[in-house]
Image (cartoon, rainbow, N blue to C red; front, side, top):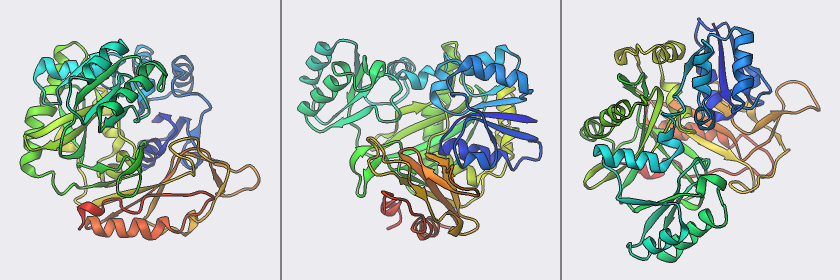
Amino acid sequence: MRVLVTGGGGREHAVLWKLSQSPRVSRLYCAPGNGGIAEIAECVPIRATDVEALTAFAAREGIGLCAVTSDDPQAAGLVDAMRQAGIAAFGCTQAAARIESSKIFAKDLMRKYGIPTARYESFDRLEDALACIQTRPAPMVVKADGLALGKGAVVARTREDAEWAARDMMEHGRFGGAGRRVVIEDYMEGREVTVMVFTDGSAFAEMPPCRDHKRIGDGDTGPNTGGMGAFSPVPDYTPEIAARARREIFEPTLAAMRADGCPFTGVLYFEMMLTADGPKIIEYNARFGDPEAQVVLPLLETDLLDIFEAVAGGRLDPESVRFRDKACAIVVAASRGYPGAPDTGHEIEGLDALSGDVLAFHAGTKRRSDGGGRRYENSGGRVLGVCAAGDTLPDALERVYANIHKIRFEGIHFRNDIGRRDTR
């Protein structure tokens, strides 16, 4: 089967790497892809949000399945268009994508169906948001309603910080249209955990729990990023908490989407806070997380194409989805300047020195035009995800750090404390 994956980051590289192991895949395409992806798939120069061009390409090339693995194409209706063209598509519809593309839709859904989350209010007028801030205790969280590359939430330690965040989004246009409306919610105490599930709208199969690190600097300092590292399993996500999350969050969310006429198919990402009152939803994503996908997919034993087809066809058997009982960790190598304007165009060295079973998923890379072979330069903020599995989490982390130090490019930086708090 010919398979098309849309996107061009580390998540897509991990998805394509796993699909390349399927004996049923005859050819892989990625639009638009990146330098590392080009090693295992034909990169197609079409933006992941160009719905018309991608649908035409899929029809012309006889694509058997299109995997829509990032947020913007789903919100743009790519899954709907593929299905209307008679092409099987893994992902969610435009209506279902609102669970991520609109924080207000998601919070209202949780309130309507009693799914545990933080108390909140939403606003489309700055003056109303500012008035609300004056009545709420700090700290609080200010969130842009729309898609903001994982950077649209501000934890405001003071009311002044919350006012600044609201003005930055609503008045100064920090996130463009995504910040015209905001959610202001209570700050939740606890530790975060993410569980992603494959689902055909009714049945679902859980992936191993993972925990990511959003801040740019060691000790969780500095601004938020799209993710600087992650690991699985999560020691404090106990079987008892997992059962409660399944009962109070996962099952009710899928039932709520069906009841509201927009059943969710694809990968649903539950970002939760483990509070003293039990697990509560921070937010949903309507796709694999990044870097979380790079942690769980190396542990997957089942043929990923089989899962994608079962989800797209509405016949997922959760018992058929199996993962290795191992630990896995990833550390992201980023460019100087990230999460602001990255310093790019520098040659990446050391990839050939990595241990044989240590993976390097490419995110912001492109092939160098001044020589052959595996020569790359950094072309974005998050450049590479160095990933390794192990019998234990300390083992996996030790192997990752031993190998990421072999990689060199001008301005490289990465966190040195991924998973440290959970392995003391």
